[in-house]
Amino acid sequence: MEGVWMEHGFRRRQLLGRGGFSRVYCVEESETGRYYACKVSGNRELLKREAEFLREAVHPLFPGFRDLWEEDETGYLVTDFVPGSSLESLLERRGRFSEAQVARIGMELAEGLLFLHERGGGLIFRDVKPANIMIRQDGRIKLLDIGCACRIGESRAGIAGTPGYAAPEQLEGSRGLTVRCDVYGLGMTLKIIAGGGVRGRLSRVIAACTRQEPSRRLPDMRSVLGELSGCGRGKCRMPQTELSRSGILVQKNIWESSWKTP
Image (cartoon, rainbow, N blue to C red; front, top):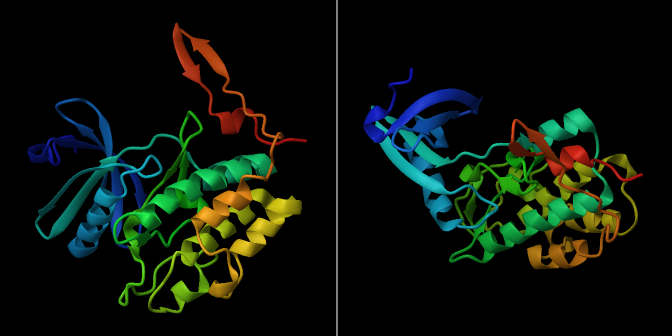
């Protein structure tokens, strides 16, 4: 098992997950000992498309592109490995987030998605959901799996996304999709992690993001950022807890150490 892909400088270490068309492994770079994620798929064209999008998404919200190759009808895409916990798994373990934490997560996502939308020809992520959002140990956000992305206005984007999070027009296969798809996905994600207790301004922001009719939603991520900036102000208590273990400084994830506000 350790000798797999050695000709490309990587050793396969651990299966991280499976999708409908791919498997994702943790791999070790032989020369440096650094860990990366490697997506393996028989659909080489989709993998090439994902690699193209990753090369454009040079922003802290997205993992960096490292390598792409083909071998025996199979494609291999190597990206930065993101250690941490998915928002989905944290939600299952610990319950809903506070209003201030929801606003902070939303603003980090909106900032990175705004970059994606305004970069070059513009990309729509199309699969914003808790399972694709990683919380690193330092509390920063990463958005994974850009494979569902498409160009703004692309006429042959096809159906993509996850029911419950994807905008209705995505699942209908509508042509000429807009950034309002990601506004909807972000809004649904915030609604889920906020739980049933969401109210006030945050509730209104979520409602404005998740309207069924695209023209009635907030128009773009710049608007979402503006609306979220006033939510939860002054209520966010998320200290970074430092623990000393055998002389090594360990940072506890701030989302674990301060989960809810009373």
